[in-house]
Length: 112
Image (cartoon, rainbow, N blue to C red; front, side, top):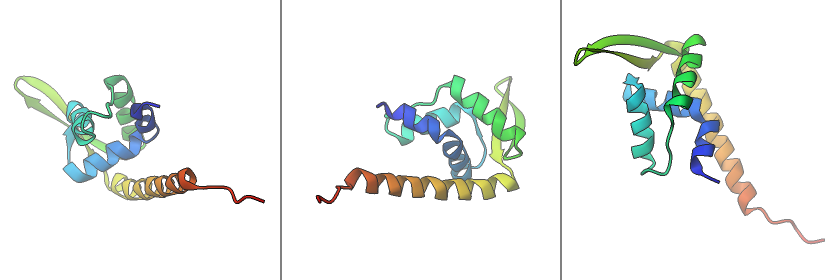
C-alpha cells in the first residue's frame, strides 16, 4: 500500500496540524511541507488538497487572507478559533487510531 493512500484518510488533520505548527500557509507550501516532512514518502496532489481546503473553510475551520506576491494574488489559509479546537481533537483521534493500529499489528491470537 502506498503511503499516499494513508495520508488521504487523514488529510484534514494533516492540513490542520501544519497550519497549527506554521501559522498561515498557501496551498503549495502545504504540499511542499508534506513532501519534505515525510522525506518524499508522501505527497498531496492539488486535486486532493484544494477541495479539502475549501470544505474546511466552509465548515468555519479555516480562514483565508489574500495578498499580492510578485504581482500575483496568493490565498493564505489559517486556522480559525474553531479550527484550533478542532485540530487538537482531530490530532488526538489520529494518535489513538495509530496506537490501536500498532497494537493490532502486533497482536497474536492465543492458541486454544
